[in-house]
Length: 149
Image 1: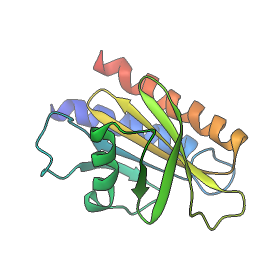
Image 2: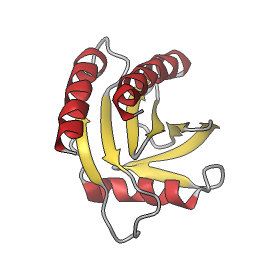
Image 3: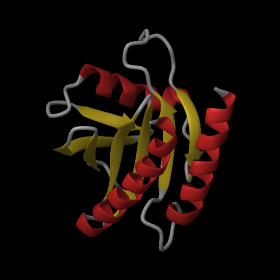
Image 4: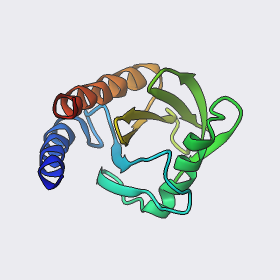
């Protein structure tokens, strides 16, 4: 198990260096969370990795509760202080826009389930930025799944 997390950490570090940053990179911040939907709800998520943000397990609990409830189309969720509304739902991921953003270009988040993890990627901008962030998230999923399967 420790070898798997060492491998996952290497994949994360390589991906983060290429895709996460405040200027010229598709993702402003990202987190990799351990996620077990069958586990007791009283357990806090484990933030396995994060870059570009300093969110805690407590900050991420509302998102995990939202995902576990499965009411993606009818509820808002929060990541830190930002409230999000889901705009697109797919088999293993969904996109959401921040409804209380202070950035003129807006911001959004992509949440992707990858095995027993959730990848949360945050971006600033609109459609083009969302597309670039999705490509980056998908590239992480491909690399992460190479070892998992």
